[in-house]
Image (cartoon, rainbow, N blue to C red; front, side, top):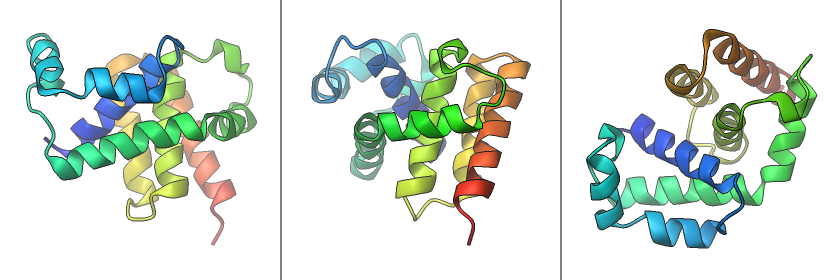
Length: 149
């Protein structure tokens, strides 16, 4: 499994949390099993391989971090989503941006450009071109503005 696959799984799990049916601990306990990955893997190649220990830690850190810092990350999204009301942003787009912003802010071992580029590539799978461009713009402006050296 590549880091980008692990990141995309974290995005999907973060997206699932937006529905409020489960806590982050419940979601991780129920979804992070070899049996569950095998079930999902029958329909989605992303889940074909269960993550190794390092990848699992990475996914869990992303999902827990996005959950714990959700209000902060949403504030950044609102700040840089010029012309878009937060309620209008698709849930998947918001989940993609939250994961990338969390990586940029809290995972210093991941280059900012890698987190943003990966987010844009993931967005191409789930969103139309206009939304992908929007995500790229929000994340780019966020990084340039918030992370001034």
